[in-house]
Image (cartoon, rainbow, N blue to C red; front, side):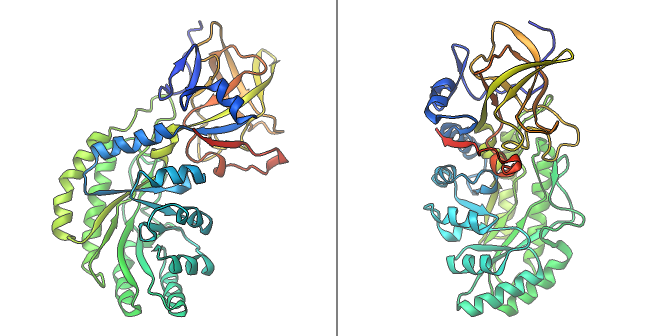
Length: 411
């Protein structure tokens, strides 16, 4: 075996039997036969259930857990998640339709995102969904639409805080942002809201995502709760909702370590008494997407051929960036790093080699693994990309070069 170390974080959430990955209680080979074609995404329901159970174990019992379905809107996944969590957050009318098809009460569904169209707002008002308002103009439009429909809209203010989630790979708050209302403008907005007669629920304060640093999350939670308490003094009614966002990250790359959820939960338990004292009517919500589903999913493609070019070995597959943009490094990475990738039906393998995994697209960006050590693969073998349960298929340019879309299964 080569002394070169694999260029990815270890992925140990799926068992291996007879050198073949096991997913949903069956071998990857059997799963591929069941799906009938490659490429495909597979999501393991027991991994999702276990992740929610882990959060329930460590977070305060007062915390309500919501699923941000933009991470993975596959209807079967959302249906399963609805049986486990307390609410769902959507970001479009399409996602709203899927959420409303679940048993989740409409009042436990929230709708966030800038640029909501009038028809989207009208549908949400009619459904009784909580609208996270992103601007003063949106508030005025919601009030007008509510009057036209004869329905009092349920609303919350999405606040752009004056701080950010440190060490976050994607900062959603602090500084100029297209998301939410700048914190210093919220008091005046709340006064206007009282005059418009909207059904005020509370605040949605989101400062960043994909964070593995306990201290950063602790600081963000403390500042978020302080901000919510301060803004409540200007509210037109009792705060019934304080959504403190999410931001829990998962390990993707070398050096990443899993988030210490127990430490995050311990800090939140210390904060809850003050929330109860200052905001006695408020339910505190943590809204998570990636953390709930990323590690429960894999992307599977098949080796079409081995190819050598000037001393470098390539595995050409039927998958690629058109299905999994994030794994190709083109979904926000500044410096490309490899996702965890293995030969799924030869996880360890008797022979090892340094190889790059590429897809069938006519672009050098179509790269799923760059010069990684893995077991020797032949045409017909199955390549597995781990950490693929979030921001996979729906975050990818599936129409590029008009290849067929991959299948999706929940097992």
